[in-house]
Length: 377
Image (cartoon, rainbow, N blue to C red; front, side, top):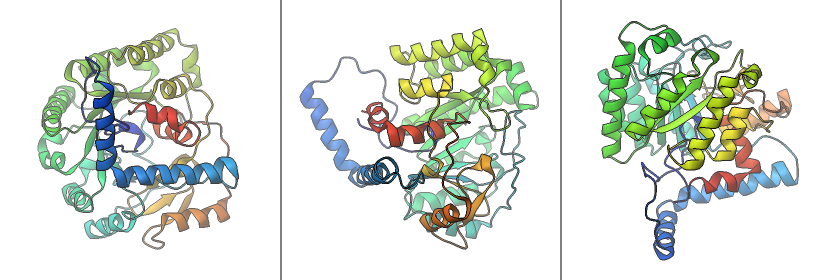
């Protein structure tokens, strides 16, 4: 099929790959053609939007070179800054620019405002499950026919099982399956790791029964490099999608990691697992090389509209700490970006100072679209 069910951490949703395993034996040419035609028919509206935006962005950004501001394909909604863990690398629990959570009613109004502008919604935080009204928010998103991805630390999933019936895809953070190591990374109470792993397995069974993907996102840090192998084995054993990127330091790429032989060995192991297709890994092989080897790239952060709990929209991105506007005051992402560009200037050419999945994916979406698309065929 052409696009995957969800890209996991990068925030862009591509419907309909599900939890496919390796294709053995290979289908015939006629079978592949029929499947491709059926796929396009089912997802005509979505694909039309993707290709239209790709053509528009290519013309304005690469051909005419008028701007680096691209039309958003998805919204990343930080529903709260609160969290029940204290991961040492987290940049969102105590952000530089805090915003108060809007009420349930106003949050649902915000979703209705952006729905005509984007079809994919990536719910994150903080920890989304810290909001008591998350089920109401997700139910509203489902009613609005968003393709909704929930990114959670998973610790409270056993107490909030209804959320699993209200989402299209699930991303759970998991940096280690070693109880002592994970508890230290997250500064959590004893027993948290056992509870989390049980929740992951239960959620995996539930979503797999309804053909929805589960991605485990592993943030790689110098203090727990060896733990990544265990997370990969856990994904392989239970048929989860594996996703990874390096932990930022003060919102910057940790370039010293490149000199660490253990990091180099880990990166080669991840890339080789991707080449051999021995594990379902998020992203194309070349995209992973950019992410893990910290290659220079051009960032187009407006591809994913970053929205804070009070409706603030960041321009161009959260690390630069500039707010372009507020959706309750200006209910148009396009207008917010246009005004912000006039006020703050165009998106700076930072050469990819923060190698996150979403940022690198924005580069591929504009410059290497067919490399990205080939991953989801």
